[in-house]
Image 1 (cartoon, rainbow, N blue to C red):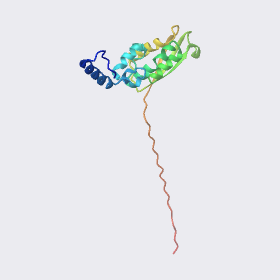
Image 2: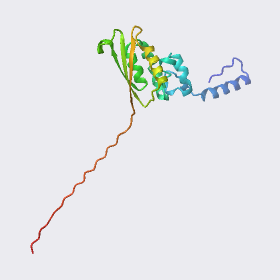
Image 3: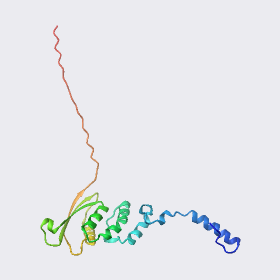
Amino acid sequence: MNNLAPVNDINLKIFDEICAERISSLDLDCLLVSIINNVPVDALPHLAEQYHITGNEGWLQVLSEQEKRNLIKSAIKMHRYKGTKYALHEVFKTLDIVGNIQEWFEYGGKPYYFKVILQVFNRAINIDTEKKLIALIDEYKNERSWLEAIEFHLASKSALYAYSACVTEENIMVNSKE
């Protein structure tokens, strides 16, 4: 580091050396908040507030640290398409929920109503979770559209191992004539 002192003072030189030592040991990766994977976990709620995704806009639904990071990464895109069917699909995908949205003209319902069919993996659904999901849908849906029904299909991701064995048997009879 260059000497910051305008005067040739020994105290200022020592101060320069201390500053150079401390600044060189700082971890600057955590300051690059645009690289979400490098941000410390305790800073994620602050980024969620900055990107305006707290509360009903997804933060209440995330379970894991990776889901939080994915939500922050997709926040700008979700806000850009807010009010569209695409935004709802994106927020569901970020939360590891497979969502199918059927509009009124696709199932013969009342005008401007829609249904949401959710396939939820590895999550428990109770009344509180349902209310949060409805609030999330209300946050990203079109203002003129109304949620008529929400269906849940619960599933668990698991590995299925199948084994098979083939057992054969052969009997040979030898007749010997003596």
